Image 1 (tube, rainbow, N blue to C red):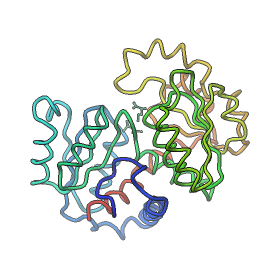
Image 2: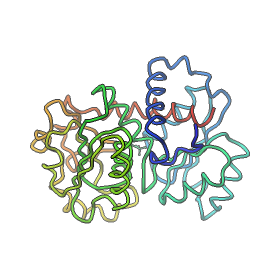
Image 3: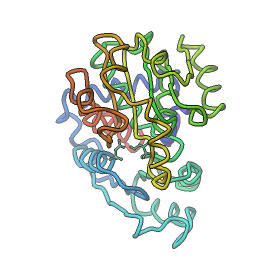
Image 4: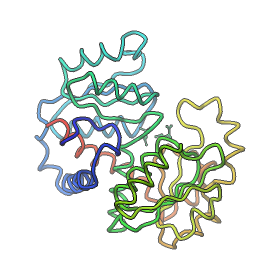
Length: 305
Ligand code: CP
Ligand code: NVA
């Protein structure tokens, strides 16, 4: 790939992202064909936050491609405290062929990529979650047969997940409507980038505090936790602020009848989404989880081979 690291959707062109989606579909359709594609290559996985899907999908994914993974927990590396990001990067590049990192500040991932002369893949920062967005748009494509011209409504906290969805939507020509309370709406630079780059693909952006307005006529209704990892102390206060943004039967009914319900998971049932919506036939949350595997196999293949 032209870009050596997978840090943010913004670094990639529409064609490059469509290529990754199409490769992911090929891998999903015939995994055996790719079983030796990364034979003997090793991925170091640095986790400074908890994970189920990211850890399992990268670990299973690299093994399915013929490679190996090494899981590094916060206790092992203690990034920036026991050892600097620079020194970790310069050590790992001598031993492995790729680094996946989940951390807090986005600049840690950027510095790791700057200093490590091996590919670095962003497995979530406070700013973005690009692998999630790739799996999500793969899921939308599978269910809707297209991405351009669809309307994706994101309801809740503007966070790493919504940032990456906005970037991907701009690249894929998908309209986005974000409904978040005042003070929790997308950062101006994220909204400005999405509007400016979306102009090239016909994607538009609406930001509102009115959940019903955002969901009206949507093809996809997406939500995420009201308190992300690292915001645990704010969880109680946020529950009050976000209550009107719960995706429940009444809100979901404003979307198209065949709208998809999406969530990156983990879900807090009874908070951002009710059981009847996440367990409804419209919900594709476990398809999204599965597609992390296929999308990331495509990303690893392009970055590490
Ligand atoms: N969606 C997602 O990234 O899940 P994990 O936090 O479990 O990896
Ligand atoms: N916004 C959530 C996503 C978890 C996959 C978080 O950062 O905790």
